[in-house]
Amino acid sequence: MEGILLRRYGGFYYVESEGKVWTCRLRGRFRRTETDFLPGDRVEIVALGEDKGVIEAIKPRVSLLERPAVANVEQVVIVFTLSEPPPDLELLDRLLFMVSIKDLKAVLVWNKADIALAKYLHLPELYQRIGYLSLITSAVDGRGIEELRKLLRGRISTFAGPSGVGKSSLFNAMEPQLKLAIGEISEKVGRGRHTTRHAELIRLSAGGWVADTPGFSRLHIPEDITREEVAGHFMEMEPFLGQCRFNTCLHRGEPDCAVTAAVAEGVIVRHRYEHYLTFLNEVIAAERRY
Image 1 (cartoon, rainbow, N blue to C red):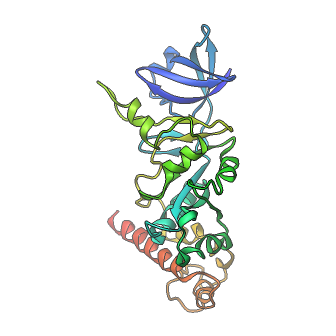
Image 2 (cartoon, helix red, strand yellow):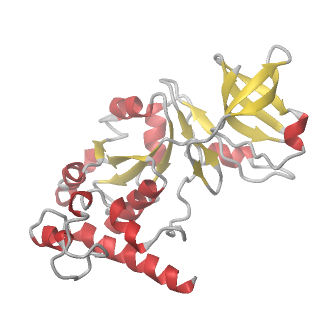
Image 3 (cartoon, helix red, strand yellow):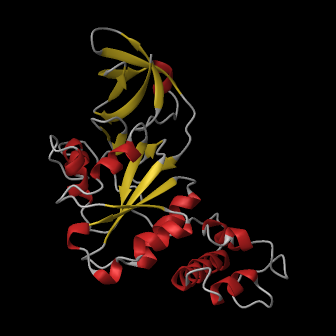
């Protein structure tokens, strides 16, 4: 049978397959190698009893997030508010940048719509116009909750965003029977002697899984990205790449730069361009260190 690994604990691996959760051990050959089985991994198991099994094989991964590790995440739900705390647009753009580097889908959720402040109401449309899927929600009045369920259905997702934006409230609005905060399950699993904090996949009643992990707890830019690659992770810059006078243009003051011309014309939003320069400078500084 093929299934998805939900969690591992105390030498046991809990795999969802054919509508139920199987408590599995690893086949001996895996215990003698460095093969690491992670929540989100697609595995093949053989039943040894009513709910017991053994893992026979692991399928190739399509993605990997670290600290704590989870495999095969397909999309990141980035939650900010239209109220308090005020949206930190540099943090938002950094999260979008990191999601793009990981080649994952980003879903922007603008929460607390029931107490939205007028000065932030333009943000969902602004990012939607850039090309990011934006959803307006309220865990209080239920706005957007059903749409969020549909976006999560059939996928492995993880949530990201600063404290206080209502990630846990949104999750509980979708799954009221659980009454758990994001991170609470992992904390319980990791509590006790000889244990560490683990990631876990939470099964959604409407289908799909949410990785109970911070997902992007480390926001420094990976060391293997080059200065030439940074602009490619800003989707509004992509139509202008290759149109500058110089092939090596980094879009930071070079003559006849198509990107800076688009910024001057208002085609590229200025704060996004400024954040591009911030990330570019971080990448260049890292290259000098190494």
